[in-house]
Structures are given as structure tokens and as C-alpha cells.
Image 1 (cartoon, one colour):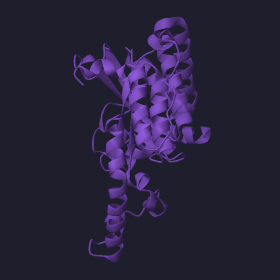
Image 2 (tube, rainbow, N blue to C red):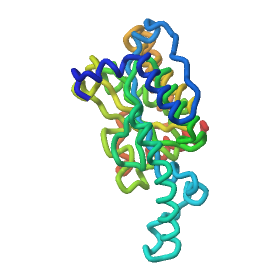
Image 3 (cartoon, rainbow, N blue to C red):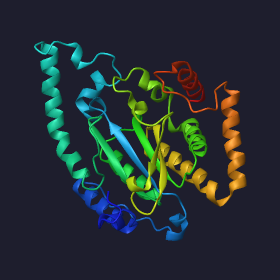
Image 4 (cartoon, rainbow, N blue to C red):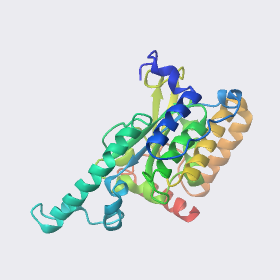
Length: 295
């Protein structure tokens, strides 16, 4: 988004975003949500945060989930002239035809970005995370997303100025229910590399020209996952709290960062930025095992 475009102001206009969201909810047959009544000053000092959620076809297409979601067998394993592949294609097209108009309607409020997955929802940035929570809840209430299914998620949080601070925040989010062993280790089996395609160690720095509004720097956290509105809400709240601490109480943040780094040392994990899972599989598998133990 161009920083000076007319849409720039709309992104951070909470009332307008709730109005547009309720227009979408009406189209989806859902009741209106009351606009967040929190005083603007409550969130004005919070760092901007935006999220992207990827949905694969076997997560998205309801009639195909029972057979394909979580299965090691893929349609590509069947010859294209086989009865199995033809049946898959028939059911895929039927479900896609039913779902795609709904997703196109959603994209007018929650934009689509990229084509790495069947659909990728790009939630515009905001300082008021309750706007994101309302938008996310709408996708669940409409049956587009389903609780319990882990959706690959990226969160971009502004006002982080050092890589060390960013890694500490990411580690805290991952270990507080924001990721999973399967998500952490996914690049090891992904053809395209999954979250490790960009950045390093699950982080990608974003500069001002890439950001909406007046933010000048941010970090994208690429290793996260969403399993429910409540789960992601907790992750977003923690992320904003930790980043706010960096500017509002530096001494408290340094103590918190040391605690996070000490926890890695206790787990036998290095403090240096880790190489990609493809090059340092042992470290990432060890970290994945710690997340599995926590879950």
C-alpha cells in the first residue's frame, strides 16, 4: 500500500473498519458486532500489528477434509486418468465453486494476498488488536475457518528496532501457544521451504516503505499458527505487550529478554540466530520437541 494513498487513513480508522466488517457479516448472514468502545488512547500507544493466515485446499474445502486433511497421500500420487484422481477433481471443483464467491466477498474487507496456499487472508494493520479479533471471529463464525485446524500464520509487529529483541519476542510467542512442533519443522518437508523461504530464523524485517501509516520498521514473525480466535488473541496481546515494554520500560524489557534467552539456554539451544531448518535440522527438531513437550 502506498503510504500517502487515500486508503492509508482507512486502515487505522477503527469505526470504519467495523462498519465494513458488519457489511460483510450481513452478506454472510451473521449478526452485527458492536464496534469496540475502548477509548482510543488505550491503543494509541500500542505498536501496529497485522496478520496473514494461509488456508490450504484441504483445510478450506469442507467435503474434502475428512479424506485429505492430515493425510500423507496426495491427489498427485494418483495417475490423472485414474478413477481416484477424476473423483478428486470432481469434488474439488464442486466445493471450490461453492466457496470461492464467499471468499471473493471476504476479500473486499480482508484482502487476499499471494498464492502460496489455496487462499491467504491479509488482515490490515491496526493498533487496536480487537479489530483483528473481530475480523478473525467473523471467518470462524461463517465456517470459513474451523477451530482446531492449524493455519499457518505470519504476524508483523512495528516498533521493534533490533534483531535480538525481535528474536526474543518471537520465541516468547512460539512458546506461549503461538506455534507448534509441526509448524516449526514444516520447512523440512515443504517443497518450497514454507516459512523459511524468506528472512532468517523465522524473522523478516520490514522497513517503512513496506508499511502502512507512519511506522518506520517492523518484524514479520513467520513461524506462527492459528487454531482459534481465542488462541490467536492471546498471541497478539502478548506480542503487543512485549513490544510496548521495549519503549515504555526498558529495564523491565531487558529483564524479560534475559528470562527468555535463559529459557533457551536451559533447553540446550543456541542464542545465535539459527540457520534454516534445511541447513540446521537438528536445532529446529530439538526446538520442536520442546514445543511438543509444552503442549
